[in-house]
Length: 477
Image 1 (cartoon, rainbow, N blue to C red):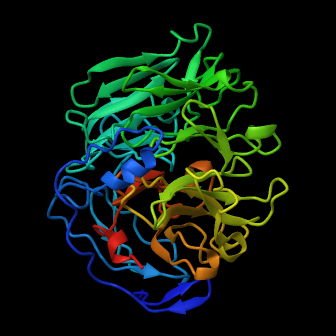
Image 2: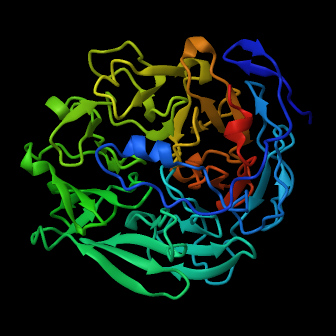
Image 3: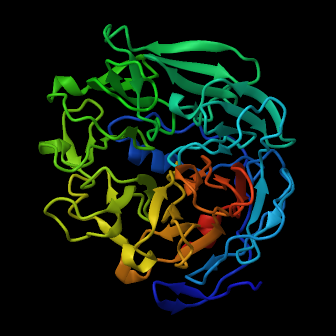
């Protein structure tokens, strides 16, 4: 095995890099700005990219994390050898990144065979990184304390219930976990077991059976704004069978900030609904071919009074921040519709710009990654972490350098040669959806979590990759 030193970005050879990342993140807690109509600007101004004194976000302020960066397109193979023991860190030889297996299906209280991270668009880890959830593929979940791998709480519900840690940094919320059941949004203290109702949407919609974002969505970073599909059915499995309305809920006022039905006919069922990290816009991820503002994903004002296009089909997507503070919706352009200028590219659209779609960035060409690749995108919560988006590239084979790799991609136009930072291979042999490694970032963008089967030699277990403290500063242009 060898260390890779070259920058080779989509065929452009440049200078190598490695070494230090600067000082650890500032101690303290950033409570975030109140999200409102100009929340993106406020959040960018107030952001401090804080990760407390513990730069790794695992409760261990003395942990040693690599600040070596591997960039480019050199093949990085899937692992061989014995399955790693849980809790024992090891280094990916080609990237220098420290990886640890977190879960074990044989741990006390675990009743599932396969454990993973939940979906890529939200963090399974608590703010500050002391706790992380391992989601069972069968619907249960387990809250681990990372410092000693103790399961502090086993939950009978899981990913379909849309579990979200409180990422606001507000006092007293470090162990607060939100989840939905039926029409209720609830909060749970994972240590004490205290469970309380936050809001029941049956109050506004007596005939509803479920309120959901369809799993892929998340609230704003400050936890104030939430998007929900109001469904007549009560299946609760992440699919809204009978859509009654789409709403934005303001947790601060405990009231609805907007109802789609006040401004448009409710008919097209989005693949998911989501709030931008700043809380400035709500995304309805409708598919291509619907009418008007429902023809592909659109970013709506929180009161649903206006909307503009940010995608052309309901493909996978995520969130990141541009070098100039743009709040980017990143997704795959699959060529749907009449505007094919960026067809077959991974694109970035400023969600707060009415002309964002016209000004979209084409960042990577699908063909350069291999046509057999599929994608899952992460969520960068903090507006101080600029210039990169996180991507899981998955495939049924390892025939391309990009297949089954976890990477960060620089948010610059394709013509400018975006750098590709290699984190780790997925350590997966593709067998089904669950082995796709839809990896997610924590709220500080300091750790990556995903489920891996150790190249087919194991059941699915939760893994963690620790990133360099303030890596975005070391990689700044």
